[in-house]
Image (cartoon, rainbow, N blue to C red; front, side):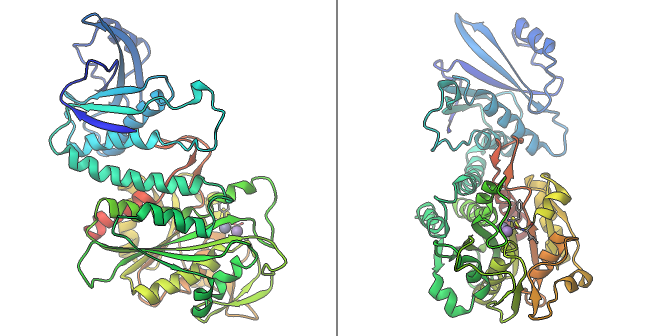
Length: 486
Ligand code: BES
Ligand code: MN
Ligand code: ZN
């Protein structure tokens, strides 16, 4: 979607969108449109759209009234995003190619105007690369939005918001691509392309290098796959020189069959998005770099494919992680924690971060707990947890804090190794988090976000269509902005 700013609505544009506050239809509107809106029960609730045709100076215009809710609303930004998104949903494939959004009398601040545009952009993202036989009426037509009457300062606010949109779109792309296209090496390649010229420093470890470092847990997961595993690190140094970075770590299982503990067939195709944590970290880093965040941040992604094979690891195998701790692999389908434990340990050794937050589509149990409304967050640190929760509310990428406790930790003790990779069926998300905690240095603030219910949506939401949501990017962006001042 192409956005341009203009002083007045160009005569060439037929369709004009007007924001309408709750219960305040502009009095100067044509009576037919006012009556039509009322008859259609349009009240100006955020996200409502009513459109009709009016004649103005001999030309016919399509006028879209878009509800933006009440001006007194506390959380206005999400409502404005929703309003912008509603315009995208309505006109994306409508046949209209251009839209003018007239904010002249809207009273919106630059940040609020940018939120509306952000919603419009995010909701218009599609990935039609593999759909070669789309019918005309299914094809995207809306390509350009001319925004009129924006307040001074919208340029800067929009530059920031577009950086975040770039990140969300990159994550969605990575998550949407199938397993035959995105595998560890091609994930790295896609990042190399996307980060070229951004100032982000890229480090990649291949299997030999990971082997030399002793990453037996991660490599054990990947050993049944023809695709080579990779560790990918993206480093953004926008803060003070020498200051310890904030670290984000992502689970990047580019396809999860379950391995020898094979998953059932129905729905297995969904496991192409088992790299959603790594996708969020990559997109988050892109957003930070594009908006030149004033913080030092490193994003680390453990990239593997989990396949059954003659060379795959077996249930009962014991592997040694880079930390030296040994793990009895009871279930090869509990592979995410095996990937993350080496990624987390390596991140601590290599970057000495001030804090670590990991993102992972880790457990089906998380989806049972919280559904598709918020991700589960586990933390050993009250301050970090509190700031993440706030960033969740502010960004719309919501989190709910889940417990950790020694009694849960006991459940993953093993008779043959230091731990087993699964506990009993009960508290499956918590024992997974306890497993990760065993790889965090004493005193280092750490949080784990289990995003299994959030990376993918079966139905459209406020700012996404069904499919990849881009969850996590905005949370990362918000956290860095608000908690780190970046
Ligand atoms: N990637 C899955 C978790 C998952 C399931 C994410 C459904 C999104 C939707 C993970 O690797 C997995 O298979 N977890 C197992 C753990 C179990 C074997 C202890 C699970 O949740 O069933
Ligand atoms: Mn699995
Ligand atoms: Zn998995």
